[in-house]
Image (cartoon, rainbow, N blue to C red; front, side, top):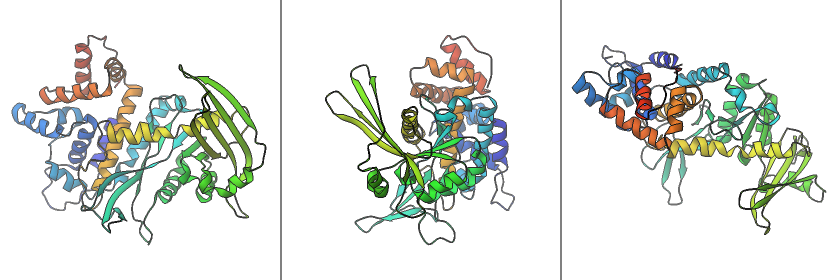
Length: 426
């Protein structure tokens, strides 16, 4: 997979037409990726110093960078490269996980794979902007520019990992007068990825924004199931049909370790999603979590195409609630756990901002791949107190020492912890 990744980067389109091609496109892309993968903003600066003093560097041995471009050269070389050029890497990693049987562990409710969709902003400025920026006008009259993206991930209740999939960027579309939006981007992602996932028994999760008939119909047309948040304020017709009906109800109790909570599930099959003659009939369910003193600690409701019963309503709700993992385990991780997604690593005039965001998401996917498949990496992560400790150690070691391979580096760390070295499976 790593070799395939490097080969993909070596074939990136090069805007240069003259003979000044000292740095390959893969050097620029791998250099950028190395910063995200090591979570070390100064990684390249350290490696340039090491190369000057030792004649070799970890950028070369660990990432295959032949010559390290300057930061400005990296930005200039990559600005014209659309992120779609590296999207096939996501598919290649996914196929590798499939072949290793890892996706089977992510199947849950009704033996489906849960794919959660969510949008997030990753750049904002009142001054820096490009042709691909979205914009909003503030109350002060000032124009605010921003970039946002749909970040689909495979999730599963009880799984600590999520598997990032190909993103879909929210950018102005050719031939459209209106500004692009999250719902339109979600439809594009489904149209582009539908064939890949249709027939694999996938259930799409999303918030209330996605719970609209055109998108739900598109999901069904492409053989997707769905469990989407369905709020009363945006689905008045549906909730009018629920009024006055004795709804089927299921109650369970769970001990949290401190207090006993009561889970009350209500549901109804075949209710109209909107007020029209062609309204799509969906199945509605709700969960209310309360404590003995009557305090409600959680309440939410969902629309789904899965048929509901006393036996499965709790499972369907649990799957629907798992959509939070796209925020906590993916978007928030990318923003607050060392990936620094919202940091402006370079904006450019064309695609730089979205390409760097894609490489950043790919670094999270590669880390997930290692945690699932590489024995040495898993052993290290399990014996270090936090992920921050691991990356702090990685940062320090690669700054001061040269390693001729990842296996050399991981083995050195394991020996330092006096752990038995497992067979090399990286």
